[in-house]
Length: 152
Image (cartoon, rainbow, N blue to C red):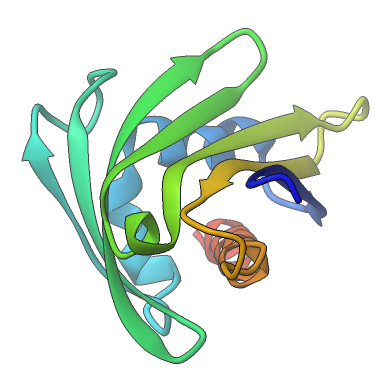
């Protein structure tokens, strides 16, 4: 049994794809307002909100449990992709490595689009489950942030 894996989730959004991308790229401080049931806080640990390689500390709820994570991001403007590398936190108790690719694909009509979450991971051992609970967390972020941005 392989300890490495990849899991994907794709969802539709109605808000502006550029605005959705912009929140994850450089305005993550807006996420707790949009997703207050699951995201308690996001704070800059090193760097700032906009610079690639800055470290952000997340306090969030997954599967009814409080968790924390520190992540570094990379941004691919051309493909509207943000890559989150988990560098510390609860996820790394289960996974030796965990990286999330968030790609926003604008609709050809210019309104809305698709959001694709892809998790690449290496389990700490064979007993560790696939990261479905983290993909569900990504789905929650997507639907709540979409609704929040549509209201703004």
